[in-house]
Image 1: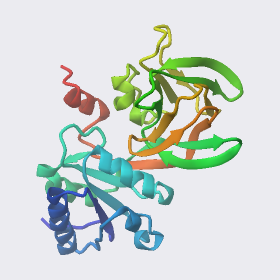
Image 2 (image 1 turned 135 degrees about the vertical axis):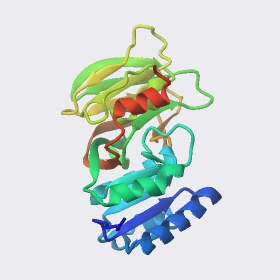
Image 3 (image 1 turned 90 degrees about the vertical axis):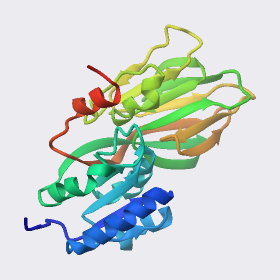
Length: 280
């Protein structure tokens, strides 16, 4: 059957492992044989290079969910669709398994992309009124206790409205996309990934009546570290970290950018939940 790709430039980002790199080379060769321009990004610095992403119509990420999260954060501002090929075991975000990759890519590249638009978060850290750090993420913003701390106290506001002070191991601010990640293991709800809400989940709260909350994204969530002489950590998507001190303020709001994840029309979100969570 004649292959007619709708896309002229499809690039690849690979997990830093032998298996992923070998598969990426094979994929790169396959794409070029189909008449499609393709470049393998060797590292994150290359992936942040705007000139190298010029005219990229699709980024294929080879690895697991973690690799896809890294790549998506870098290319979201360019609105480049991302397709994950799973080399791992679980994979809620990676759409295609490695053993079916070439057959599925033939189908995907000959049709308009089926894209799922996912909200992202922007976290900004302020110390003594000055901006210390700022970054976007797709899954979650986590504030948790330092290794040597017994508990961490965090006061939480939505806009200027005080909610409560959580005492425990910390809190998670998750997107619906991240609701099947750390937030789920901490007792949070599963939220349909294309919704636009904040999910606030306390981690091992000292008070059992502290429960997860679903909040609107129209106002920022403000978190103040109130534990004296105890440090805490801010992590984004479980990958990028900043140490926090007493009185630091973290502002979490909806990012102006979205992630554009390529989905296959033969598999819906609930198919994935049944498979990954062993539902009947």
